[in-house]
Image (cartoon, rainbow, N blue to C red):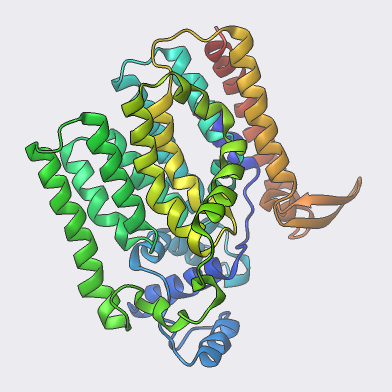
Length: 395
């Protein structure tokens, strides 16, 4: 866990990547100032988003409250240090926090299921350092929160499952599909659909759907799409061949995360059906409407997938463990190398590679001593934790 978190922190992007992230930041900052979740009367530093809202003809945000509100504590820290919007630091730790919480829950879930320490160590490395998880950890937005809630559902007790099912639809439009998949996965895993816990979970699932529909979507213009209703003419909503789209969406993610899936080969038929129930709603929806960024869209499913396929007691040879770790690290490195490339002047020449917040902190923003201390500390922690973790995982 420490190894994975240290490596992810070393590669913190320190910037928002897509327009979605910028909008979430602008709305969260406005909420901190006014208590309102919209783009009206934005403060200094958000002039660009004021113009975008004017062009749209609406100050309403597309995003659900739980995509926005978890950023507020990080924003408070940025304001305490008087960082302007263009130089926010702490908000870019949101992905790390929620992904790390999800990894902790995954590890605890494996222990509760009887996994040996070696298996737990191996599985956390395979989950935390594959590219889709590493990518989302570097970013803010709904995906880290969805990942956390999905692992909370898969590993928590009865009340935790109910909370996760109610909250998932409030994070992102895809949260309802994730909740549906999680419920189907749970029914097949426990094999007791008529039981009281399953009936209660079904009530929570319906309650989450209904609460978003009534309290958010309808007041924002569309019962199904909410604020996205204004974009119904967008090319995103033009359907394509769902089978072909699903293949284009799922195959890259499976290739990035192949070591996680090897345990599925040993599962009985019902176990493979539970995985199908988990993945089907999200894959078929995005496969029908958009196959862009499959890693980001499907990443929240990976924690639950790990818990389904992990070889809890079956021994894995040292050679196999080493190869699985190598594949995963290469997956993370290849993805990182191509993630929104940046160019930064350094004493050794121009650096051309992924956006690295600590590199820019030292070489562009002029805080070289602080950046060096953070980098050396994280490298030392990663080295010490890595030696122990890999020894444990390949024993």
